[in-house]
Amino acid sequence: MRPTPFLTVTLTGLIVSTAAAQEVNIYSQRQPELVQPLIDAYSSQTGVKVNIAYINKGLPERLLAEAGRSPADMVLTVDIVRLTQLVDMGVTQSVQSEIINTNIPVQYRDPAGKWFGLTARARAIFASKTRVQNGEVTTYEDLANHKWQGRLCTRSGLHDYNLGLLGAVIAHDGLDRATAWAQGLKANLAKAPEGGDRDQVKAIWAGECDIALGNTYYMGEMLADSKKTEWANAVRIVFPTFEEGGTHLNISGMAMTKSAPNADEALKFMEWLTSDQAQEIYAQTNHEFPLKLGVSRSALVESWGSFKADTLAMIEVAAHRGQALSIMNAIDFDGH
Image 1 (spheres, rainbow, N blue to C red):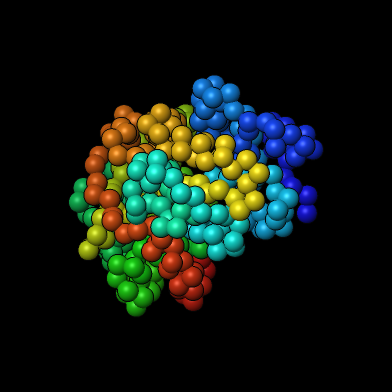
Image 2 (tube, rainbow, N blue to C red; image 1 turned 45 degrees about the vertical axis):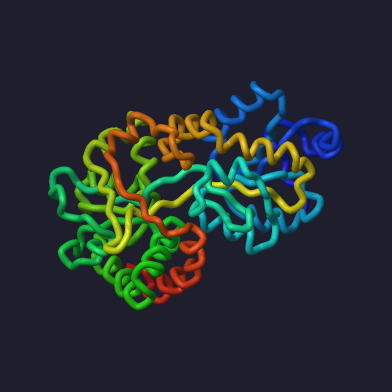
């Protein structure tokens, strides 16, 4: 399999020149427009050329096939499940950095240094402003209550965002209660799971359901899109908690590839991504929560209100992904 070409250089030129040039090559599951402001800022300050290839699907398999020939120095991913998949497939390497470890809280990074969180988002509830009263739903466990029968919408139960949430339910409540919870969610669905998180907000606006699960940053994206503003204004964000915990967060993150040809430059960029400047760019551009303590959220995100983040380590959430997937398949969650 041929290595993936990057957006800013030809692959042939990249392979020939990487040893001498100051550059960093990234395989990214995050959309280019979300990452480009960071790349522009870093390159402007340092003169280092940052090349990025957007790979939505099959990224771990691509790295595995390329092996030592891969031009990629590091990977940017969209959630904890995909970070740990990279580790499990043996395509990352440990990074020891006092800077990163100081900037990123311990629950949002791998103890062995094989992945690090960069930003967080809450798996929140979008609730109809007109059909759901304030305080009517406060916990994730509430979502399985029969009072929501025919009133809940969500994307596929097999999607990593929902598997991450179910993994956290398993960690908090145990396998049996988590299975019953997933069955309760399925019983409360207004329709078969489909689309993404924004589609669930649209369904609430259209009156098809009253509550939905969704990542918080999608609210920011909808409010910035005149075609979707009306959907967003039909709902409020609720930050539920676990009965014995806080609000579930997932993370975007980074890892250094096992074969990184520009490992030193990649490490410098990784450290910079945890700096105040980079975390502020993330916060303002992506409507996400910066992980470095002391960095302010955007004014829009602040307007959504405060919440108590769950303290469960991300690595524990990811450890239950297999069980979560088995539950969703066993109950045929998407076959509503």
